[in-house]
Amino acid sequence: MSASRALVLIYDIRGFTAASRRLSSKDLGAFATGAHRAILDLFAARPPTFVKHLGDGHLLLWETSDPPDPDLVVTVVHAAARAQTAFAAYVAGHATSGAHVPRHVGVGVAHGEVTRSDDYYGVALNLAARLQNLARPEGLALDRGVFELAGRQDERLRTAFRRARVRLKGLGSTLVWVARPFSWRRLLAPVATAAAVLALPLAYALACDAGAALPGAGAVRDALDARGWTVFRRVPTAAEVASRAAAVRADLARRLVGRRTPTGWVLPSYQSKPDELLDVWSSSQAIAALLKTPEVALEDARALLGGLRAPFEPDQWVERDGVAYGWVAHPGYTHTEAEPALWTATALAVALGRPGLVPDAERAAFVERLERAQRAAATHRPLDTGGWNIFPRQTDPAVHSPYTTSLALLCLLETHTAGLPWLGSERQRDRLIAKTVRYVGDTFLPAGDLPGWRRTGDSNEPVSLGLTLQNYALLLRAEAELSQPIPERIANEIPRRLASLVGTSLQQQADAGEFRLEFTNHEGRKEARAEGINFLWHPWAVEACHRWLAYDAKQPGPKATRERVARTLGHLVLEMGPAVVETASKGYVFVSSETVFCFAALAR
Image (cartoon, rainbow, N blue to C red; front, side, top):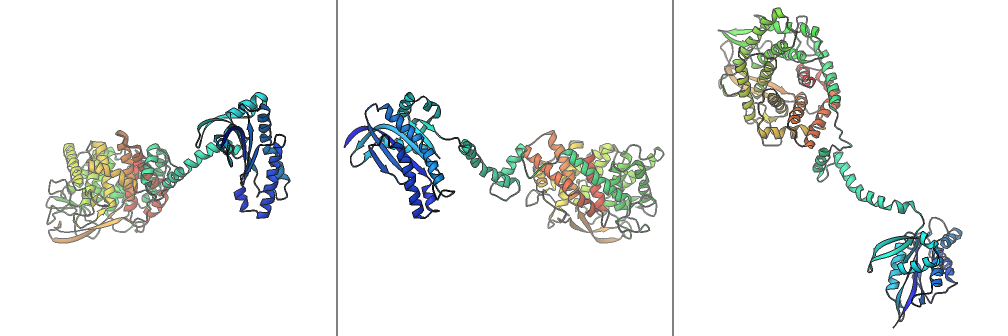
């Protein structure tokens, strides 16, 4: 084996392998023969010492002195530079030219030591091979020595090549010079590569944002919400929500006002006849809602005051042996319940708290009616536990009603908002609020799929979504208005439950519970009654979302949590608003009343 110096050139026609799948062997062979000849003929002026066929290209080697003849180097480099043009001309003129034949050729030229035995070996051959591979998809690459020799002979070559430091396999960091035709594809390749790298995670993030059930989707949505980024889960603005809520309130209030009788009562259903027996419970609830609604004009509000006078007429008001029982549960019933008394007390507090509504000449009479309603409500609190009972004089007074307790808390909060006392004492009012809030907190069930409150006092009863959302709204209100602390186990659960309501529909039926108890009625007879209670979830979800956002604004928590609750509120009001109006305007008016009452919270 003998060592010598050599100028080595390797060229490669790109795409022969792919072309072999599209062209017949005969056509491909004819194309290859002509293509190789078109390139090899460029070096006829200075024939190489050695030529070797490499399948898709050739190796050309010129043994040289050290340093090599500059004219030889320049001649080889010029011929190599013309290889792209010659090859392109051949492709254009070839009979089978078109979309299926190779169109690019890459050339690499290096100078260095080689060893000859049966073949040529050495670093120069390896370097030339790496250089032609570097010149993709087409072009010419030179090593440092070749470039400097050729550049001294022909200054124009210096402007045609771009210097680059690259890491070549087996050769390490190497300085090379490359000349390639301008290509948008090559120019944008780094961007395309980066885009390809980013495309998959971006697509994954977008799929998670759209709600796809992918692994880790919840964590991705949390991360997006924490930054306020979303494409598919837009969070409506507070102004948008307030505007739609006002429209819903106004529409439902108009329909409720349409159920008003000439004496100011509100009929119990949308199918009721004007001469139907009137229901204190549903009428007082509707009046309370309408009086809280800013869209109800003062004139219409005053026309409702008759519905707060008439319940105290002797044929409606129930009092025996100096005990105020209030009102029968519904017309024709033989027993009284807490709900009519609590809703009437609530409506009276709202009326007295609305500036300019109750005439000055009647204010004292309305205050006296409020105290009478409160006395009736107090009969449902035989034990000082914070819990309230649905029936008076129950056989077991310790069996409290979760719904009645929540309604009592609402009544007390409205009394506080109006600046009015409870049974003549503001201190007594605030003590009762604190007791009731504490009882509600103590009866929260933190475990299970739906942490919250049972529908009745029966330990076999399921947790009610509607009552749970109502209690969330009431506890948040008590915290905001009276600084009553919310237990941490409840405060942590509220936003999680609210966020889970995104995507719900009104097809999710309101749940109902049945309260069965024995008691002694106002006439002294023993009774065993079952009272059905419907728990609406949608209106209380709206108020709970609104109040939680205000609660969070005082002591901000994670932004992701706020985004989710705000998104829920937008869904409940903007997306479900029209359907809510239509659904609530059928059947009993209590659905409209409760919806208007809760939506009124968004007006403040």
